[in-house]
Length: 214
Image 1 (cartoon, rainbow, N blue to C red):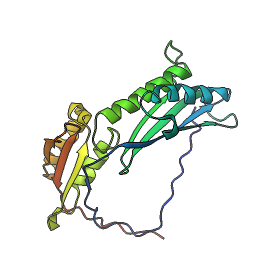
Image 2: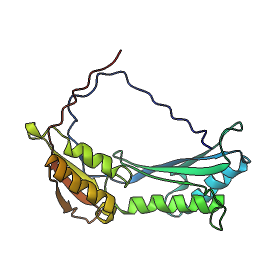
Image 3: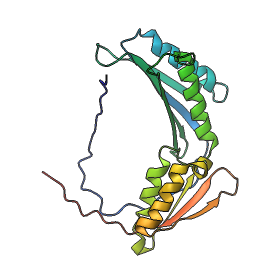
Image 4: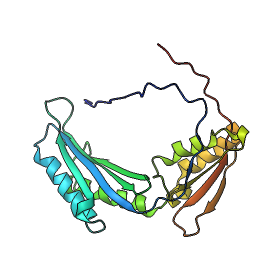
Protein backbone atom coordinates (compact mmCIF):
# COMPACT_ATOMS: atom_id res chain seq x y z
CA UNK A 1 0.00 0.00 0.00
CA UNK A 2 1.02 3.61 -0.34
CA UNK A 3 4.08 4.63 -2.28
CA UNK A 4 2.96 8.23 -2.90
CA UNK A 5 5.30 11.19 -2.69
CA UNK A 6 4.77 14.79 -1.62
CA UNK A 7 7.26 17.48 -2.67
CA UNK A 8 7.08 20.67 -0.60
CA UNK A 9 9.00 23.76 -1.65
CA UNK A 10 9.24 26.84 0.56
CA UNK A 11 9.96 30.22 -1.07
CA UNK A 12 12.28 31.12 1.79
CA UNK A 13 10.52 34.42 2.46
CA UNK A 14 9.58 35.74 5.93
CA UNK A 15 6.11 34.56 7.07
CA UNK A 16 3.17 36.86 6.51
CA UNK A 17 2.04 38.92 9.46
CA UNK A 18 -1.42 39.52 8.03
CA UNK A 19 -3.36 37.84 5.27
CA UNK A 20 -3.80 40.09 2.22
CA UNK A 21 -7.29 41.21 1.31
CA UNK A 22 -8.97 38.76 -1.07
CA UNK A 23 -11.14 40.22 -3.82
CA UNK A 24 -11.91 37.77 -6.61
CA UNK A 25 -15.31 38.11 -8.24
CA UNK A 26 -14.92 37.46 -11.96
CA UNK A 27 -13.69 34.07 -13.22
CA UNK A 28 -14.12 34.92 -16.94
CA UNK A 29 -13.81 32.16 -19.57
CA UNK A 30 -11.93 28.86 -19.51
CA UNK A 31 -8.63 29.14 -21.37
CA UNK A 32 -7.11 25.71 -20.77
CA UNK A 33 -7.76 22.28 -19.31
CA UNK A 34 -4.73 20.36 -18.12
CA UNK A 35 -4.43 17.00 -16.48
CA UNK A 36 -2.28 14.04 -15.64
CA UNK A 37 -3.12 10.33 -15.78
CA UNK A 38 -1.08 8.02 -13.56
CA UNK A 39 -0.83 4.31 -12.82
CA UNK A 40 1.28 1.96 -10.71
CA UNK A 41 2.14 -1.71 -11.27
CA UNK A 42 0.00 -1.73 -14.42
CA UNK A 43 0.72 -1.60 -18.16
CA UNK A 44 1.59 1.88 -19.46
CA UNK A 45 -1.42 1.78 -21.78
CA UNK A 46 -3.67 2.32 -18.76
CA UNK A 47 -2.69 5.99 -18.58
CA UNK A 48 -3.24 6.39 -22.32
CA UNK A 49 -6.75 4.98 -21.97
CA UNK A 50 -7.47 7.41 -19.13
CA UNK A 51 -6.23 10.42 -21.09
CA UNK A 52 -8.10 9.47 -24.27
CA UNK A 53 -11.40 8.83 -22.50
CA UNK A 54 -11.22 12.13 -20.61
CA UNK A 55 -10.45 14.04 -23.82
CA UNK A 56 -13.41 12.45 -25.58
CA UNK A 57 -15.75 13.88 -22.95
CA UNK A 58 -14.10 17.31 -22.69
CA UNK A 59 -13.91 17.94 -26.44
CA UNK A 60 -17.71 18.11 -26.50
CA UNK A 61 -17.37 21.40 -24.60
CA UNK A 62 -13.82 22.70 -25.14
CA UNK A 63 -11.69 22.98 -28.29
CA UNK A 64 -9.12 20.14 -28.49
CA UNK A 65 -6.30 22.72 -28.67
CA UNK A 66 -7.08 23.83 -25.09
CA UNK A 67 -6.90 20.32 -23.61
CA UNK A 68 -3.59 18.80 -22.51
CA UNK A 69 -3.59 15.56 -20.53
CA UNK A 70 -0.27 13.89 -19.86
CA UNK A 71 0.36 10.21 -19.23
CA UNK A 72 2.73 9.40 -16.37
CA UNK A 73 2.93 5.69 -15.54
CA UNK A 74 4.97 5.17 -12.38
CA UNK A 75 8.23 3.27 -12.72
CA UNK A 76 9.22 0.45 -10.37
CA UNK A 77 7.15 -1.82 -8.16
CA UNK A 78 6.38 0.56 -5.28
CA UNK A 79 2.79 0.73 -4.02
CA UNK A 80 -0.35 -1.14 -4.88
CA UNK A 81 -1.70 -1.56 -8.43
CA UNK A 82 -4.10 1.18 -9.46
CA UNK A 83 -4.66 4.22 -11.66
CA UNK A 84 -6.13 7.70 -11.45
CA UNK A 85 -6.54 11.00 -13.21
CA UNK A 86 -6.54 14.64 -12.12
CA UNK A 87 -7.92 17.51 -14.21
CA UNK A 88 -7.54 21.28 -13.75
CA UNK A 89 -9.40 23.97 -15.71
CA UNK A 90 -7.99 27.51 -15.64
CA UNK A 91 -9.70 30.77 -16.61
CA UNK A 92 -8.27 33.95 -18.09
CA UNK A 93 -8.26 35.57 -14.62
CA UNK A 94 -6.53 32.66 -12.89
CA UNK A 95 -9.52 30.85 -11.38
CA UNK A 96 -8.96 27.11 -11.04
CA UNK A 97 -11.46 24.25 -11.01
CA UNK A 98 -10.26 20.74 -10.18
CA UNK A 99 -11.51 17.17 -10.22
CA UNK A 100 -9.81 13.90 -9.39
CA UNK A 101 -10.79 10.24 -9.56
CA UNK A 102 -8.89 7.06 -8.72
CA UNK A 103 -9.58 3.39 -9.29
CA UNK A 104 -11.53 1.51 -6.66
CA UNK A 105 -9.88 -1.05 -4.40
CA UNK A 106 -12.60 -3.51 -5.40
CA UNK A 107 -13.34 -4.37 -9.01
CA UNK A 108 -16.77 -3.26 -10.23
CA UNK A 109 -18.55 -2.70 -13.53
CA UNK A 110 -17.79 1.04 -13.57
CA UNK A 111 -14.12 0.85 -12.51
CA UNK A 112 -12.47 0.58 -15.92
CA UNK A 113 -10.01 3.33 -16.92
CA UNK A 114 -12.59 4.74 -19.34
CA UNK A 115 -15.25 4.92 -16.61
CA UNK A 116 -12.90 6.60 -14.13
CA UNK A 117 -11.80 9.17 -16.72
CA UNK A 118 -15.35 9.97 -17.80
CA UNK A 119 -16.43 10.42 -14.17
CA UNK A 120 -13.53 12.81 -13.59
CA UNK A 121 -14.27 14.83 -16.74
CA UNK A 122 -17.96 15.15 -15.82
CA UNK A 123 -17.05 16.14 -12.26
CA UNK A 124 -14.82 18.90 -13.65
CA UNK A 125 -17.59 20.23 -15.86
CA UNK A 126 -19.95 20.13 -12.87
CA UNK A 127 -17.51 22.26 -10.86
CA UNK A 128 -17.33 24.76 -13.72
CA UNK A 129 -21.12 24.86 -14.07
CA UNK A 130 -21.47 25.86 -10.40
CA UNK A 131 -19.76 29.15 -11.22
CA UNK A 132 -17.72 31.25 -8.83
CA UNK A 133 -13.96 31.70 -8.76
CA UNK A 134 -13.16 28.69 -6.57
CA UNK A 135 -14.18 25.05 -6.74
CA UNK A 136 -15.77 23.12 -3.89
CA UNK A 137 -12.36 21.81 -2.76
CA UNK A 138 -10.88 25.28 -2.27
CA UNK A 139 -14.04 26.99 -0.98
CA UNK A 140 -13.57 26.08 2.74
CA UNK A 141 -9.93 27.28 2.77
CA UNK A 142 -10.83 30.51 0.98
CA UNK A 143 -13.69 31.08 3.43
CA UNK A 144 -11.37 30.68 6.43
CA UNK A 145 -8.76 33.01 4.92
CA UNK A 146 -11.41 35.62 4.15
CA UNK A 147 -12.67 35.49 7.73
CA UNK A 148 -9.11 35.93 9.06
CA UNK A 149 -8.38 39.18 7.19
CA UNK A 150 -7.06 42.19 9.02
CA UNK A 151 -10.51 43.56 9.83
CA UNK A 152 -9.06 46.05 12.31
CA UNK A 153 -8.02 48.17 9.34
CA UNK A 154 -11.42 47.96 7.72
CA UNK A 155 -10.39 45.46 5.07
CA UNK A 156 -13.39 43.78 3.46
CA UNK A 157 -12.77 40.65 1.45
CA UNK A 158 -15.15 39.68 -1.34
CA UNK A 159 -15.02 36.39 -3.23
CA UNK A 160 -17.36 34.59 -5.59
CA UNK A 161 -18.03 30.97 -4.67
CA UNK A 162 -19.92 28.40 -6.69
CA UNK A 163 -23.60 27.72 -6.11
CA UNK A 164 -22.64 24.24 -4.91
CA UNK A 165 -21.42 25.75 -1.63
CA UNK A 166 -24.97 26.70 -0.66
CA UNK A 167 -25.90 23.03 -1.03
CA UNK A 168 -22.88 21.73 0.90
CA UNK A 169 -23.51 20.82 4.53
CA UNK A 170 -19.77 20.94 5.26
CA UNK A 171 -19.42 24.51 4.00
CA UNK A 172 -22.54 25.70 5.81
CA UNK A 173 -21.27 24.10 9.01
CA UNK A 174 -17.95 25.90 8.55
CA UNK A 175 -19.70 29.27 8.22
CA UNK A 176 -21.64 28.62 11.45
CA UNK A 177 -18.46 27.55 13.26
CA UNK A 178 -16.64 30.73 12.19
CA UNK A 179 -19.44 32.82 13.67
CA UNK A 180 -19.61 30.87 16.92
CA UNK A 181 -15.86 30.54 17.51
CA UNK A 182 -14.46 33.80 16.11
CA UNK A 183 -17.56 35.99 16.19
CA UNK A 184 -17.25 36.91 12.52
CA UNK A 185 -20.25 36.88 10.22
CA UNK A 186 -20.17 37.01 6.44
CA UNK A 187 -22.59 38.70 4.09
CA UNK A 188 -23.86 36.49 1.26
CA UNK A 189 -25.79 37.40 -1.86
CA UNK A 190 -26.27 35.80 -5.28
CA UNK A 191 -24.37 37.22 -8.23
CA UNK A 192 -26.42 39.29 -10.63
CA UNK A 193 -26.02 36.73 -13.40
CA UNK A 194 -26.83 33.82 -11.07
CA UNK A 195 -23.45 32.17 -11.66
CA UNK A 196 -22.34 32.09 -8.04
CA UNK A 197 -22.51 33.49 -4.52
CA UNK A 198 -20.75 36.69 -3.47
CA UNK A 199 -19.29 36.36 0.03
CA UNK A 200 -18.10 39.46 1.90
CA UNK A 201 -16.18 39.34 5.17
CA UNK A 202 -14.80 41.88 7.62
CA UNK A 203 -11.96 39.80 9.04
CA UNK A 204 -11.07 39.01 12.63
CA UNK A 205 -7.69 40.77 12.39
CA UNK A 206 -5.69 37.57 12.70
CA UNK A 207 -1.94 38.14 13.26
CA UNK A 208 0.74 35.57 12.61
CA UNK A 209 2.94 35.60 15.71
CA UNK A 210 5.07 32.62 14.65
CA UNK A 211 8.81 33.06 14.28
CA UNK A 212 10.93 31.47 11.63
CA UNK A 213 13.37 28.68 12.56
CA UNK A 214 16.96 28.39 11.42
